[in-house]
Image 1: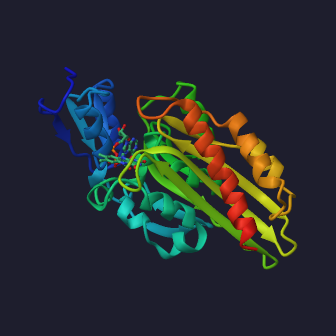
Image 2: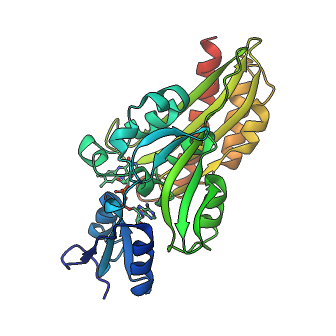
Length: 296
Ligand SMILES: Cc1cc2nc3c(=O)[nH]c(=O)nc-3n(C[C@H](O)[C@H](O)[C@H](O)COP(=O)(O)OP(=O)(O)OC[C@H]3O[C@@H](n4cnc5c(N)ncnc54)[C@H](O)[C@@H]3O)c2cc1C
């Protein structure tokens, strides 16, 4: 039986491989819930936004789902990798510093030592998601058909439509490694605005990746936003404006602000209205363009 709060004792099942985890999930016909670090789930049980299930399937004992390495042209991050490990890693430093910045702003060290990147992604509202979107990340899943890879963007679209089953297990997040063009420099940007300086849920987050040519012209521009209960999404109108534009053009930041105002989707809650979140996101995106233009 499901119950609110954390007073009830759940049975913890500890599969040693992915098949066993799937079998248990099926055996309990959906009453069992996958758990990794448990930081989000526990918070949800405590604030009664989710039921504590009778069975928990602890994924941490499954081998091969942790660690960060270069594999087949991508940075392969096992889903069980704790956020503390993603906060500082040479591969992320070189190719995905915006993800490290996103992780830096999540909770506090005690939480980051338990919380996993997999749990952050599957929550669909985790602060890592905008950074992963601008790097074109893929998700590696396991279900009864076996292992398969799906673009994060596509998964978010399906998840947003409410048509997702929760049987599948996230095994890894992959960030394609881009060959660096010698004549251009990359911009990596991530900023989170919360209700206070640190240890705070996000009001809005913006991440940007772009290449800047020697002439200051932007290419391969990706802008994504999220925060609060907002599912992370690409801000395609602002991307289009920036593509081919010259960084430092005074007209660009206000145009980006307007485009994000028109496209950013947000939900209001007791702490911040939807309008406030949209305006915050628009300001962040405009400031990303302005500060990078100013420093040229
Ligand atoms: C005090 C506090 C502050 C926080 N601050 C932030 C913050 O600033 N930003 C932020 O983004 N988050 C924040 N969180 C939420 C949470 O810590 C993170 O999202 C974390 O990364 C979740 O990871 P986890 O391993 O603990 O997930 P869990 O709690 O174990 O699971 C989260 C969800 O993912 C599912 N799941 C987990 N792993 C898998 C998998 N491999 N395959 C399929 N499904 C899976 C679970 O069933 C569950 O639905 C905070 C939490 C707390 C308690």
